[in-house]
Image 1: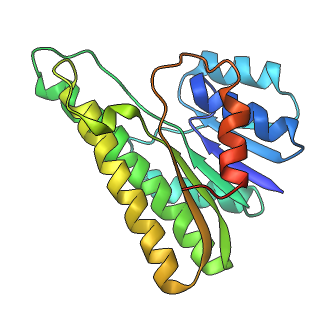
Image 2: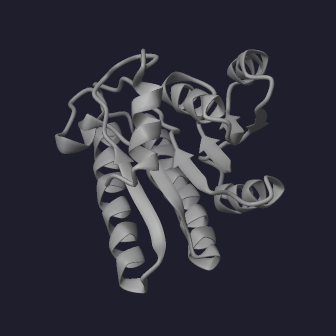
Length: 196
């Protein structure tokens, strides 16, 4: 079994990638920061790591290429995210958050979903946030983009049902838990059980 974990070299993404690796899955984890990539590679030598900037306009094509390079995928989880403390609502900061958390994550989800539609099934997951429930004065774009992901994932789930595709779509909605302390296995189990 093969898994692609986008944003899998740090935080909860790393915890989820670790759970896939522990379960014996061939795993490719992406990240942006060189230090996190190197640390992940040292901690999980059986896994592969690739640098990926989801805020790039070519993010969708890059995800398609990663799936192909992996030799296909049975599960794809999008765990990337950017939070910038921005109490003055500076547009440059908001725009960065939107580019990664909305456009970039949607591009990755769409690439994986399209692959699973063609394949005839798969497990698609996204790490969103409890922040998607309400607004946030200190980073309005962060919470708004998480709400966007709630709806985008629901739409993909409905699309899969209408098409009769065997694609599960799991929205992982954590509160702030830092590095995750045991959350990796819980997220993995939810994806394996095809929870919504």
